[in-house]
Length: 387
Image (cartoon, rainbow, N blue to C red; front, side):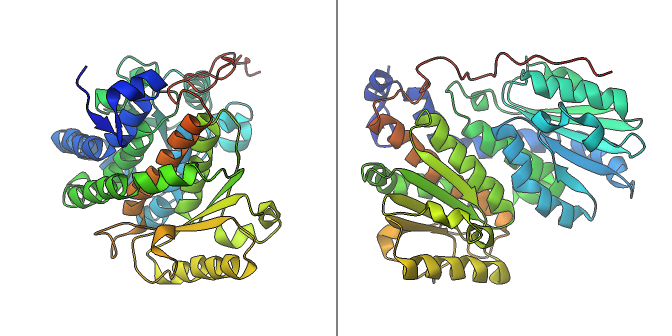
């Protein structure tokens, strides 16, 4: 094995520690974003040919669905895509759809079901598609997956379906989804925003993501050594979904050893702020939108006045937050970008923190759950017959 460096550690050492794949998959995200865009550009006429007639239907409903991290990709995109497309775009997890399909699926409403899946083999993901096929009269499928051999991929067939197959390397081999999350999210953003449009933006996004990895890996490694017991992620609108994914990464990679929470900056005051003590680390994802950013700033200033948290870190693409340099993760080159483009550089710092917290606790990041009760692809789910 060549002794390359990933997240500041030699691969030989990472292999010994049981974190080689996690470190590689976090580090490869800039390259995988570029590779995903290349694959989309090669198929953009096919993608547009599938989506354009559907988006021409004024009553079309779009559901973004998946389980766990795959569901959170939808949560990161639904508000933005709904505004951008001028129609209903809803993030509904397969774990909600399957247990109560009649509450979520509308038989008479033309629907595009967008299914995200790293492996494409989660029982709920397959069941959600089968239930939707059964209950919705006019249904189309867009499958975004990292695994060409997964069960989901088979449902994206013409004329009612399309499968977007991501680069093989995004089919993460580690326990926690990292590059699979970012590339599935990017692919959905690109196909609905315009693949050709994103071709002009992907390099800036990838460079900004690489910059966070290069500049802030030591900062996150040091933060993991400060022995926090609670970590809170806060973000407005699409960043609330990112906050949820960030919290899950820490929970997964520490095998539940750290308490995590996510919320919006405004929502955090309504009770959840009671979690804060001197062993609490708080991250605030800052919006580029001036109006939204004013609320992010208000909450940050309140946390500083309270002086109860052990540490507060701002992740921002614009200057003017006012924290010490050690407490700002500054994303370069995207100060005037749409918030959607910030999703990709913003997520890597929480991923890196989770990786080093896992190592600090003596766990193996590639398989942190020592009991085997939680698995890379969920097991033990029984799908009941719908009467």
